[in-house]
Image (cartoon, rainbow, N blue to C red; front, side, top):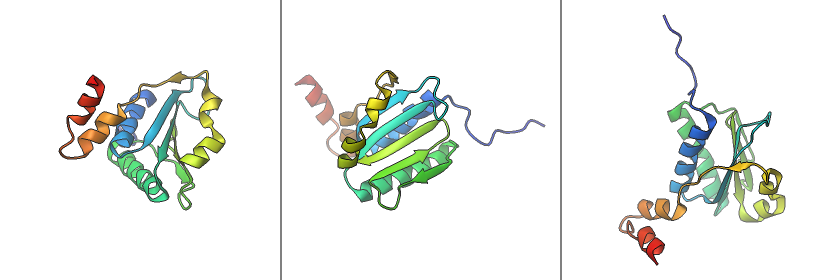
Amino acid sequence: MTEEKTFSTLPARDKAGVILAWLAEHKAFDMAAFHLAENPLAEVSIVVSASSARHARGLADGLLELCGRERYEFLRMEGYQNAMWVLADLNDIIVHIFQKSVRELYNLESLWHGAAALDLPDERKSRASAVPGTEGAARREECA
């Protein structure tokens, strides 16, 4: 009898792609993602902004659901109550969900200036496909 793995064995970069696409679909913005080679804390760090505390908590709740559905390990979450900076620890991926003013204050991206940036989904396309009747808006913007 073979033992089934509790959590997904997908590489962190692949999981990050799924997470980034989900965040873009749910209107997270100013997204950044870094591969942190040789970092003992996580392989990937994702930083996004939310438009309000309610939006940040909604993103955090949805991220937790996504992790359950995809069987991604979810260790803990910090900062959910005030939602100015929500940190989700997914073991090999850390997701930071910021309010704009707090993100500017801490400027986490400067910590990883030498790290390899991961490809991001096109936020305009994700937003256009999420709003009925605007499917062509992103294509029109690209052609302009």
